[in-house]
Amino acid sequence: MKPSVLVAEDEGALVTLLRYNLEREGYRVLEAQDGEEALLVAAEEKPDLVLLDWMLPQLSGIEVCRRLRGRQETRNVPIIMLTARGEESDRIRGLDTGADDYLTKPFSMTELLARLRAVLRRIRPSLAEDVVRVGDIEMDRAAHRVRRSGKEVHLGPTEYKLLEHLIQHPGRVFSREQLLDAVWGSDVYVEARTVDVHVGRLRKALNLDGVRDPVRTVRSAGYALEDGVTAA
Ligand code: CA
Image (cartoon, rainbow, N blue to C red; front, side):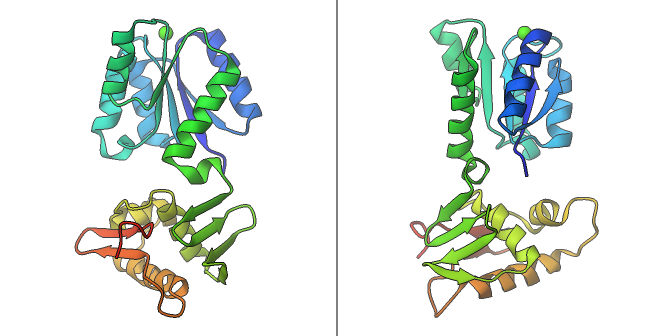
């Protein structure tokens, strides 16, 4: 699955340049030409990262950033602000609002791509790398393999997708509904307890020879994958 990047920018020439370079690097590109559209596309398409221009028509980039952070479904999306201004106070305001990084125009594509990879690696390691590790669990997405403490773990397709989702956000608790949306898709009707069944299978497959259980059940809230530092 290619990571998707929402480019919220009203300068056509820059959008063309960004699209060309991002697609060449293997990203899927979504576009929005003003602030309102950026919010709509972000809510509908759930991009993996947002490149957000500071000066946008309708709603400013800073306001878009604030609203993205205020909504459940976009709260955690990585945001890189693009700004034409160089003032330190503006930069700080940008980060205060919840942006993960910022770039001052004009910037080189090499720098943009490096920052983008760095933000993705920090926030969603599995999008930037083929091999993701959490504690003693290793997931190789290119080879479609999972190992625990070096031993091969065999997972069914649903358990694999569950682990793939959980491993992207170690420690974060997901409700059954969120896991249903992420693994089965929001247009499929599946009962919430189906999630419990598959989490049970995932747990069983991962827990070899009585080693620590990395899947944490949070009563009436959901499930999380622990990295081994925070869990007993
Ligand atoms: Ca602009």
